[in-house]
Structures are given as structure tokens and as C-alpha cells.
Image: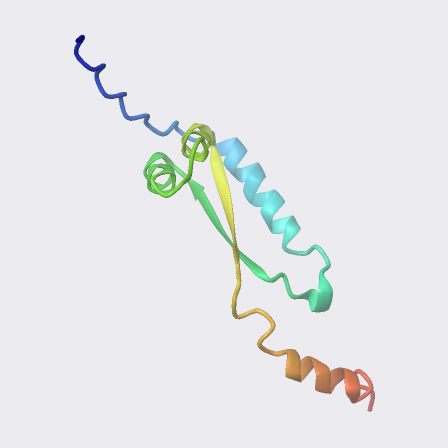
Amino acid sequence: PPPPPPPPKKKRASVSDPAVVRHALRALDVSRRAPSGFNAQPYRVVFVHGPEAKEALAAHCIGRNADRVLDSDCAAVFLADRSWGCDWDRYGRFLEGGGGER
């Protein structure tokens, strides 16, 4: 039988365009101010750019997502904040008390 094909070369991360990274960071900053219930924003964002950081993130991606991270100028990873909502008792007392009326 013929010999097996050589293993594929490891793909390297692209260099990020600083202008794209600045625009993405600005968009992320604006999104932080978007309204949500109780103004909670129940997530955290990890913003990744630069070859080393993108390669580290890509190592934990599933399927073609690794290639997308490596080819991107930057990647924003939204993570659920499991501690969000731990103050619901405080919100409930606030609402039951008339919303802070004195």
C-alpha cells in the first residue's frame, strides 16, 4: 500500500490589524451600555487578539472554529456569569419596598 500522507502543517495565527482591534474594542465598550433587565449584563467577555493569544484560544475550539479564530483580527468570547443573579433577594426587597421611595 502507498505510504500515508504527511500530517497537515499546523496553521499559524494571523497578525491582527490594529485598526480592526480598536473598532472592535469600541463596539464592545458601547455594547456594555446596552439596556438589560436590572441593568445586569449577565456575562463576561474575554477579548483575544495577537498571534499567541489566538493560538491559545484556538487550541480549545471545536471544529472549524479554531481556523476562524486564527484567521480573525480579534475574537470576543462571551462567558456566562454564574454569579449573576445572586442578589435577587436584594432586588426583591427593593421592589417590595416601593422601589426605593422614601
